[in-house]
Image 1: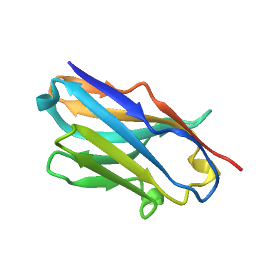
Image 2 (image 1 turned 135 degrees about the vertical axis):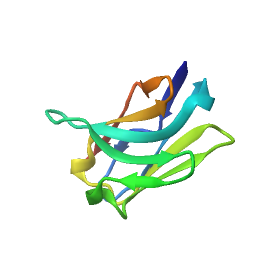
Image 3 (image 1 turned 90 degrees about the vertical axis):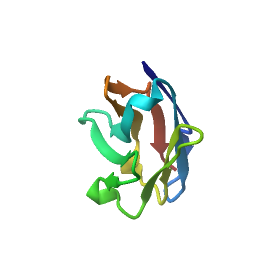
Length: 115
């Protein structure tokens, strides 16, 4: 089993930055990719960014240049650096792990961009 614990959400003003963290534990050897999704009120959950064990990344096109996904293998942690935040980035952000045992979700962390 894989467990994911997210942190780093909060309230930030437009134009500000936040860094989300997702720490994986348990059967981490089974993970081959991790990512971040978000879900705004009344909208479907969407992929924000993903990163494979090999370091290949993928981003929602509209977020390229503002968001960066990275990983620290020694800490079994994936990060999402979010810059130049906009009110439309307000959502619950979920960490996701694709493993050979299935797809695992974190509990979600709220990001609110507001003045």
